Length: 254
Image (cartoon, rainbow, N blue to C red; front, side, top):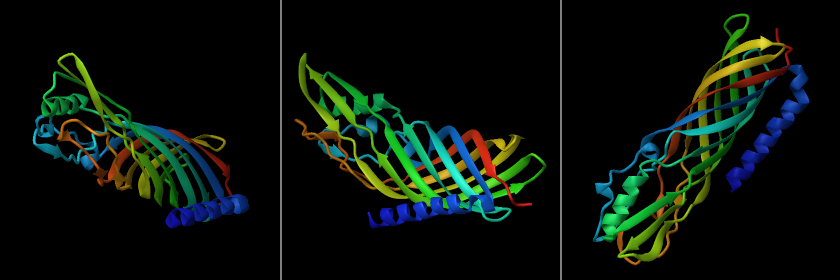
């Protein structure tokens, strides 16, 4: 939490600097939305047969995250022709894939007639200050980049497994949602095309990384078998593609 407090202070100073000195440079506000492609174990799904265990429980490093969606807001004050300081707020969600594999694993592990698995989604928001770069390539075209570090708050999905055997409803097995705040980083590049009176459109690609190291709680189960996760320590990393609008508030550099 000490790191988070320091980061909030740094972001507040950054915003104050932009407000105080905006008219001495160029200030750009951006609003973007796009798709996020999970990488590594975060985006993997285990096979149905690998989730079957009748003699004790088993772990699982797969995150089951589908392609997600997100939106972001950037603000940067350019203290020179090419470089600026600013920050970004981003929020995104990821649904889960291969739910049938999870259901099959629980059903075979518990040796029951039917399992029905319902899930929520991953949710990730981040606040990251950092360095921005913008270089004109032509009269209306510019290339831009950013290097940001900050914090991300992420929550895992809840996985609810309803169980029925011999027309008897057994107590459900539940993997509860967990939340954690951790370090985050973002590296991005993009192209900006200026339309009219400070308004421009952006197309961007970026890499996002955070590793919250979740501690996960589970409901009690009647059978000591199947998939059971008490922690998830895999990185939540992704490659993102977005488009949006930007507005240049002041422009003093020649």
